[in-house]
Image 1 (cartoon, rainbow, N blue to C red):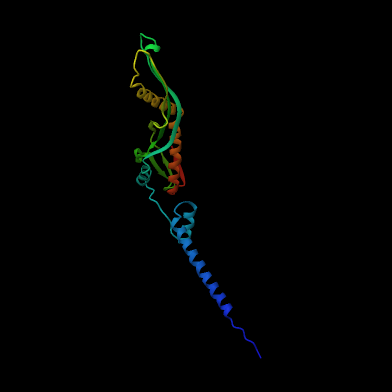
Image 2 (spheres, rainbow, N blue to C red; image 1 turned 180 degrees about the horizontal axis):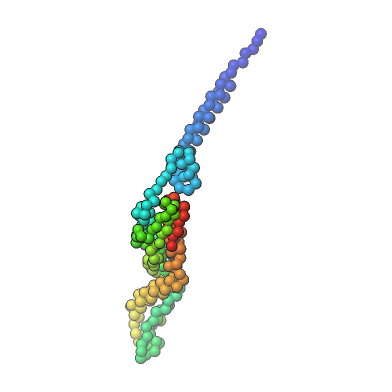
Length: 219
């Protein structure tokens, strides 16, 4: 008498292995498609181009480059913040401050923002040489865009008014204006414009390399 064993178990294993292979191929294809879609810059973009056989080209003529840079518009590249105390006072030419003076101390928190307005870039500021391989760009002058006080963190710390006069209603606003002027002067003396230009050069340089130029000089 002979005994025969069926292959039911091996059949299930074979079908399970086949399903796993198909699922792995499907997931791999989905992952590859997602990679190719997202790889738009840098090394991933080059790898994607090698896989698909497609290459990305940019119009690197002077008008096109100027337009790409101008899209950055008012490029804010540095924020200068400061906390300080500013004094405001008014005195009488006749009476002492104890009788007719008005003095306050203002705790100030503010910031200055600087950068470059790249919308001012002109075609003559861009020079392309070596058959489109190298580019030289002269940026517009850096600017101090705005200086503002943070009203939530700026407050009157102390105030003293003479015995014979009421508090001057304009003293606090005048002191705030004085604080903005001091903040702006401090930012300029600490080189905010030089830092703004340096940071803008780095940003524009990165942009130009991404357009395919091999040599980039931004001044």
